[in-house]
Length: 349
Image 1 (cartoon, helix red, strand yellow):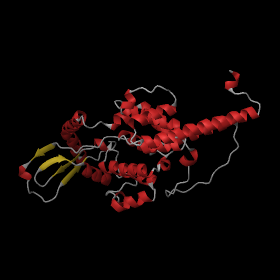
Image 2 (cartoon, one colour):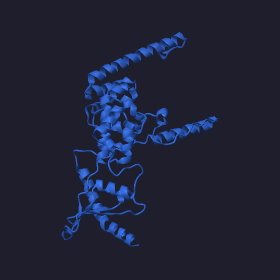
Image 3 (cartoon, helix red, strand yellow):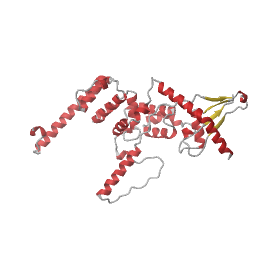
Image 4 (spheres, rainbow, N blue to C red):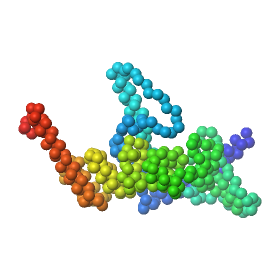
């Protein structure tokens, strides 16, 4: 009963100050004209659709066997009617889309700077800090009051590092550790990157950190930049991390390598979609302002490459090769049709 009243008193006493602190932090974010908040773009419905289309849905990759410690269940074979088969396909598609749910891209969180109170009478009362935590049932972690009394008598909000450690102590989340794992540091991370364990690193980062944690953003940024430098995009394709990687490259105006890979692998529609996504996030760029005269995907990509790309010569040559290959394929297809006595559309006209 006493602990319940103390917890209630703490929440009532500090709720006003917490809201003031949050308001102060959000005001700083909104008034910062040098940095845009990626969340307002990332959660845009149309941008989400673009990212999902670029991710692609490869069932063999989404439902592949994973070495994650779970017991494998043997496959089941069933005889199905056409209606049951359609229902099974819809269920598999729904399940696959859930597996491809993208981790959010948000702005890095700010440390709380407001001091609750200063009590000089408590200075040097003890040599350790006292932490007061609201562990009431049913609250979200961000709603919990965590305050610290320093040895100098200052009562303040806990830093994010302190909050994460204390909340994990009282309300532990599965597979999350109290301290940052060594795999996210220095040589350990480089070793995993060299072994192409990109999905493992990103999955583990999602478990260990919150999306606005500076450590999470530093780790994911390093993984995305490594993949971009090595052009290992296909390793993440058809995983839930492909969309955030694409968004990061577009956000940092660094899409040339990915664009080249898409053209090289005959994904010209994806290349055009990538550029449209780039224009949505950077609407004032030259290629976005100047309209492309021709509507087809190849000319649309060429329009961007000539105005924006830092590797324009290389990508233009690749596009020319792609156009020549498509022309040759069309000639071969027309020849096959004529050999089988099928008149082409041009012959009909």
